[in-house]
Image (cartoon, rainbow, N blue to C red):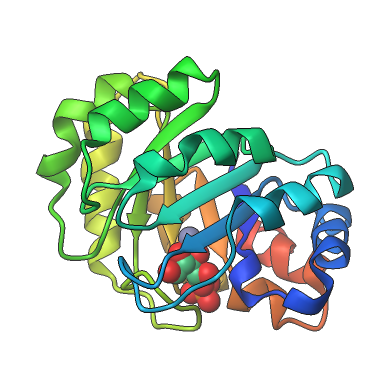
Length: 214
Ligand code: DX5
Ligand code: ZN
């Protein structure tokens, strides 16, 4: 089954709680939070305080994507804020293996993300330890960019490497009904989508289309 994780980056920041409740009602499976620090990526978004303030408005898992230089410094606060899954970037300025153990020690799921220019081979040593690989199909930092098709090859390779292990493959950036179909076919389990959900007239229809339902 494919899970849909609407990215709040494209939501109306002046009414996040309502946006979260609306996508839950519309069939979302996870809520994706893009935490940006203005260093790892130029943009600056929200952090643990904002995540925590919205935790009570949904029962859906919070999928926190840390696009920050030092994810290690935010893990405790994100867990305290109600994160269920925390993804750190392979390219960040800290030891990702330590971040993964720290997240697990706090009882949460741990993911590692790779940017478009980072090779899948870099993630291989971590596969036995992680719950999720997040393949970036755009340069991290902003919504509304075009899907980079090289992500599909990465998903296929990862699917093969993961085999029967319980590691989910998530893909993030430029997901619309067409690219979603290609990602599902390649083997992705989680589709992160900002623009194609929050800029759609009907969130429910947008989510159904991403899942491949009519
Ligand atoms: C990009 C973020 C994405 C972003 C995707 O840095 O990680 O989650 O919100 O936005 P769309 O779906 O508009 O490409
Ligand atoms: Zn993201």
